[in-house]
Length: 174
Image 1 (cartoon, rainbow, N blue to C red):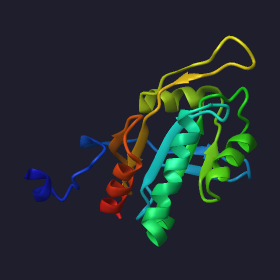
Image 2 (cartoon, one colour):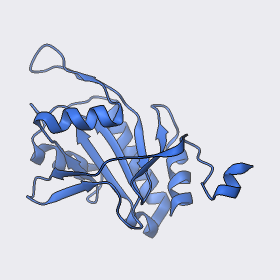
Image 3 (tube, rainbow, N blue to C red):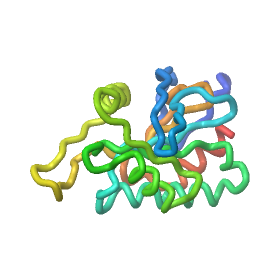
């Protein structure tokens, strides 16, 4: 009942209540420009940490994003979908960008290396552990993060959450 009074949408994902202000990050993109993770007027952000050699959760998540985008239609043009690699040793910025674009040309893939990836993972509470060989699988957190246009974390979508929940919540934010 109080949700209606505050103007905060009733989320189908796991609501972060109260919404959590997140720091703004500028991440290098393969094309030389910087990608901003943070507040951008009128533009919610959908964020996922994964890696391009992932056999299951990562491709399924980005395929679900495509379904979300299709359902939202023209309004999805304002949503920023960002795939962030936790495997910078194998996922160069160009590889991460190409991977995200395979699912949709508007999806952004980035692969920040060094201390920046560690800081991002700490900020968002992401865990990742590489395997022991060059062909390794990376064990990683697998939730999707939804930030509103003010750069606040408002909802999480653990693995197994139907894509329709994210579509509903983005529809409420838009």
